[in-house]
Length: 463
Length: 88
Image (cartoon, rainbow over all chains, first blue to last red; front, side, top):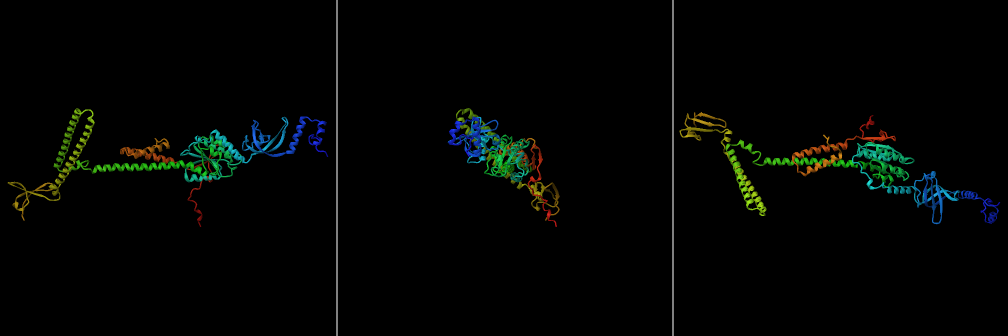
């Protein structure tokens, strides 16, 4: 009935006796310690802060767990470590599940961890923060890395699930906003095992495809676990390495993923991504429409302006219409015009000659400083001269118009054209117009001027 | 006619310059008309480029081949042949 005779330190009452009675080797003792620990403690959850963590080439992770008073060596083998989503780093507070054991060659006890999770926050949150910090330090989120979207993409690549809400939303928006868009869809899983690898592959494939100028990658809303693929490093790397601009559209407005941060443009939702990708085209359409409208406006205004000018010139007297009109009027009128022109020319020549003489005199007699004042005066004189010429020309023109008018009113030709005739009688005193029947005798010859031609008639009756 | 228009961007740029010149109103009628004709040509080109594609949806396989997308993916277009079931 004695307890554990094989454990010499087990019972204080037997300690002295057994030490004297028998000794054991280090190995034996260590083995005993090990089996005692392993059977007594078995599986345990332990909480502490990681220190001295070191990842070996074999994939095993060695570290120390500690709190204020004590520390405990720990190891996590590769087989367990690869399921971790976050990286156990120094300073991180964790809760680890494992078995306590003894590493006999060194005589050290340690915990062999099967699983660990951050203390006080989710593993995913920690993983997110860690990857975010790392990529940020690499400069992958930098504003100057962001590429501008093409205004007029030839083909739009879409990496998402074929039966997800995201694709449905994108197609709906594009059907409305850009019905002739050319789309290339690369179907991928967007959650679960292998999703990240597929998404990353889809992004690189699409970005290298001939004709594709922009790629939308994303999925509809879901729990943070569902969106997780878009927080994986492989996806982030594929987006960063893409040769065309990438629009990331993951979940709802409030969900921000690593993919969103690396992408050239983050769209709050897949529908928004579709709107963004066609916004450039809308803008161009508006711009071209406005320009076309302005162009038409300009053309209309220009034509109108020139037409008005031509009309004005036509209406001005003494210009284009004159020669033709003058030719129709009497010789006197033509002569008058001739005289007028000659007079005008002569006047101009005389004035010009005087002006030249004046200027010459001015230049010889008044050189130097006064020249400027003289020049101003000259300009003024010239201006007065021009004005007086204009006035004279206007006066002459008015006279001419008056003369022409009167000439026309007086012209007998006008009366004859209406059917009247002029009757002439020739006797010893010369040729007179017959105004009274008593002025002629029966049998006299009369000459009658008609509108066209002339008649000779004899008087056969008088009344 | 549009042989000397290189690309969309430069076409829009040239169109903008032309409109500005025309709006300045300092050109002769002849020059204005020439610019106007060029402007019309450019704006036709731009509209053409904005509208010319026809709708296409393709799927990209994981081997990198393009295939036509199943009809299920084509958003419903208002079709005229949907009122056939009211025959008595």
